[in-house]
Image (cartoon, rainbow, N blue to C red; front, side, top):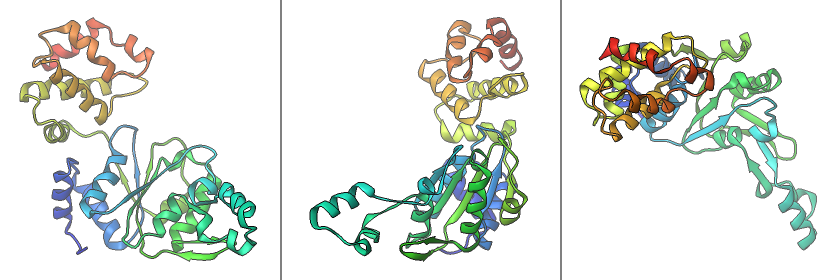
Length: 287
C-alpha cells in the first residue's frame, strides 16, 4: 500500500469513526513510515485498543490481537504443539518424530500468526503491562528481529513485518529496553470538542443539545473521585441508552436519567458516590 501523509491518515481514521489529534496521527504515521512498534500509554477507556482496530481498517488488513495477562507464557503467545492430534496420529499410523513435529501439528498463537502473514497485519499487543517482566524480555527479541525459533523446526522469519501497536494502562512500569524499541504516544481522555466529534461520528442520531449535555456530564464525572472513570466506550453506551429511551434533555426526567447511569458507573462505590442530588447538580451545570 502506498505511503500516506499524516493528514491523510488522520482523515481516513476519522472515516472509520476514530477521531485522532495531530500528535497521535503523527505517531501512527511515523510508526508506519519507520517500521517501528508504537507504544500507546494512558488510562483505561480512552480508546487505545480502538486505535489498532481503526488502523487495520485504514490499511485494509487483518488485526491480530494478543491480550496480555499475568502469567502469560510463550505457549499461549507464540505457538504450541497440538498434542491431542499428535497422539491420534501415533495411534493411527505410528507417525515418526519428524512427522509429528511438523507444521501440520503446529498451533500458531498471535505472535507467530502475525509474522506468518503474506500481507502485513496489524499486531495489537494489548495491555503489555499486565504481562510479567520475563515475557516482556522475550517479546523484545521478537520485536528486534521479527523472527521466532522453534527447536523442532528452526527459525521462522517474518514474511512481512507486521504493524505493531502495544498498549499499556500503567499497571506497572515498563522496561527502558521496551520503551527504546518503540515510538511512544500518550493517549489521554479527549477534550470537550474532540469528544463531541467522536459522539457525532459514532452516534449521529443523537440531537446536538443532548450530545453537549452528555459530554458535559461525562467530563464532569471524570473530575470526581471515582474508582472507575467513564471512558469513551461508556460515554457511547450512555448516549445510545438515552437516545433509545427518547430522552432529549437530561433535566427533563431525572429519575430515568439516574437509572441509565448503569452505563457509566461500574462499581458499587461509584454508584453510591453519585446519588440523585449530586447528579442533579452536575446536570444543572451542563443543561
